[in-house]
Amino acid sequence: MSRRRGPAVPQLVGVSSGPRGAGADPPRPAHLTASNVRIEYRAPGTADSDITLAVDNANLELSRSDFVCIVGPSGCGKTTFLNAIAGFIPINGGTLQLDGSDIPGPGPDRAMVFQQASLLPWRSVLDNVTYGLELGRRMKRSQARDRARGLLDLVGLSGFADRYPAQLSGGMQQRVNLARALAVEPELLLLDEPFASIDAQTREVMQAELLRVCTAQDVTALFVTHDIAEAAFLADRVCVFSPRPGHIVREVAVPFERPRHQRLRRSPEFLALVDEIADVLYGGGAEAGPDAAAPEGDVH
Ligand SMILES: Nc1ncnc2c1ncn2[C@@H]1O[C@H](COP(=O)(O)OP(=O)(O)OP(=O)(O)O)[C@@H](O)[C@H]1O
Ligand SMILES: [Mg+2]
Image (cartoon, rainbow, N blue to C red; front, top):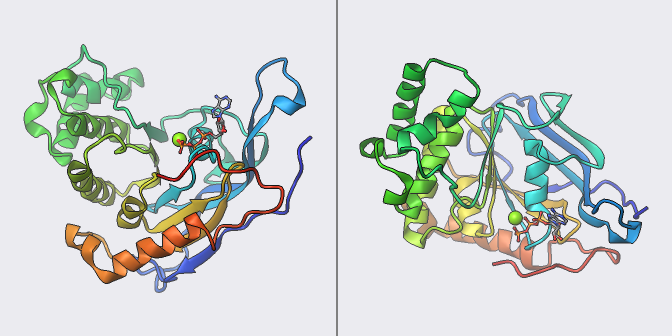
């Protein structure tokens, strides 16, 4: 069996009072709790030496309405961690709980947004958004369509309900994807580099829209990105993952109020925060024990 280290409890750095008055508000109960989570990959019938330990000793707590970003080196286990929270893969150690109960598997309480929108090409934009609601048979078709129209409005696509995915730009497709994920009213929205393949300018617009939508819908979000400025713009807290096996080495509090405007990106405070996160990520702050695996790639 592979080695165990002591629990790696992330350290909170940066300004400690949260952007929504965490200093004044009573502490909110945990919604998601990850304690010493360990996740390994092993092909059936292979030896112990063929195990890939992707995540080890990962600790994270999310309260409702939190927006938390994860950054970390390529291959450090970010997607693996998100997949486990979504219930797509099991954990091999530790506990992963939603509102105090172990995560049983995929459920309508969580929605995942991937890098590629992967919309159904034969369905209209509106019908893509209603798809999840039809699957769950949660409401009448007319109600589902009404909700989908409201969400398309929210993501700025009200005039595109009858178009087909191939008629939309990449950024528009990702907005449909977001509306589709929000349609099922998830308690927790999991986003894995959702804007990675979108051009820089559209991406900044999408970031502001995502934050606006999550604030308006009071969504709890866990967002993985390689882009430190994206994380600093979106998050209440930025969690920095170690190289594989991944765990959170540092949480950096983000002190900016919502709504956040594009000009925030040019402020000295924002640029200083981006620097601070980069320092943790690229060296100095990140712990690297003698038995820690080498990073598998660069941080983009
Ligand atoms: N299905 C799988 N089977 C075996 N190993 C896997 C599988 N998925 C991921 N891994 C391994 O687990 C480790 C973590 O992968 P993961 O995709 O979680 O990294 P990541 O942090 O999301 O990387 P990136 O930033 O490049 O997306 C890597 O070593 C990867 O090779
Ligand atoms: Mg990944």
